[in-house]
Length: 70
Image (cartoon, rainbow, N blue to C red; front, side):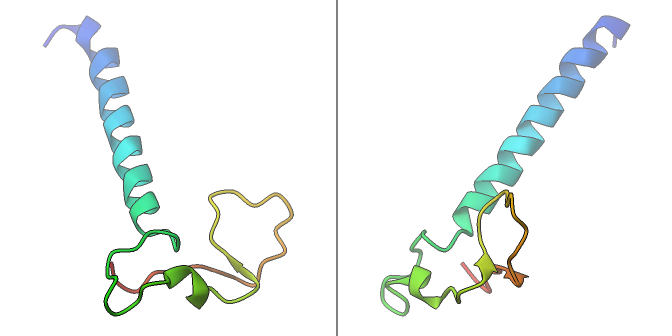
């Protein structure tokens, strides 16, 4: 492989990896419904003081949101 191709491959791999990570993160957010029968409103299970956003400016949350299953 020529040396000129290395930056293109590196940027492509980084872009695909970042997009995969972000789509996985979006799929596990509390406002996405995967199972309407057992849990029609998953956003009601988020307790106060739980961080579920990507970036927090103040940093005053007690814990991070973790979805147990899709």
